Length: 150
Image (cartoon, rainbow, N blue to C red; front, side):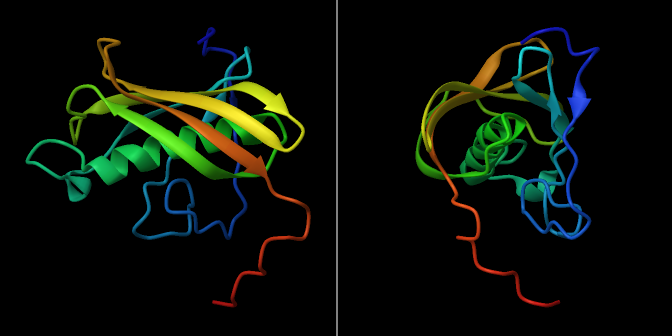
């Protein structure tokens, strides 16, 4: 990951209800990613105890969500809207709840609508706690359903 001092914040639409990053989802994680100079993305976050599995540790599904979100944002930083087709996760060490973590993602390869990505979660010491690789398919314009009125 390159120097984060010159990173650019990824912005969201005011009505974004995404569980991972949506400001309009009251139960969501509200992650805010930035794009580093090398095109990778990162987010520094503290995830609440509300998302625990074992006491003091994030639930495995939440860890998967964090990694998926980082890979999705890595695609978005490249101007691509894509959906996860496959994801493989390695849970290396417990990810603590209520503690600062860093989530990083990057696109490793692209061929047409196919995009391969990777992501990792690190603690404040820089130890990798979990990592993933993913395969995403770019969404064709107009192919997503229209959101329901709220």
